[in-house]
Length: 128
Image 1 (tube, rainbow, N blue to C red):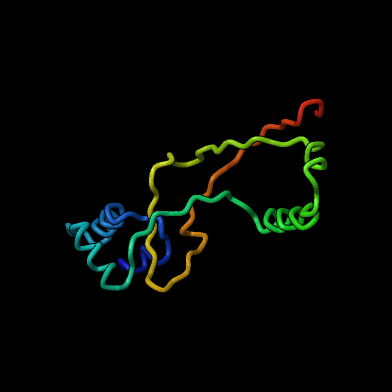
Image 2 (spheres, rainbow, N blue to C red):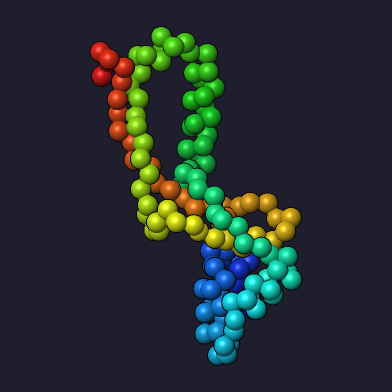
């Protein structure tokens, strides 16, 4: 049951997993017992990586942009109106967010803390 919790929904901390387990089995469980059991099954806690929430379409568009403009000069880029970005927290603060990862398992989307970016335009003097 414990392995199913962390294998299917990897956002649980040991404390929240303990509370969920206690609720389901109706018995008191130590968070240290949960940690030891997960370690025995080759799970370990990792801090979720922070990355922008990009769809496959966004990723493809970014790659296409890079390939299209890779040979531009500084003068070319001076004619561009740029945008500044700021990150907005949607669900949680910038505090640490944890996930369980089994040894040898590659990082997946569920191990990433997604962010939302808001942009603002700006340009070189005399442009825009």
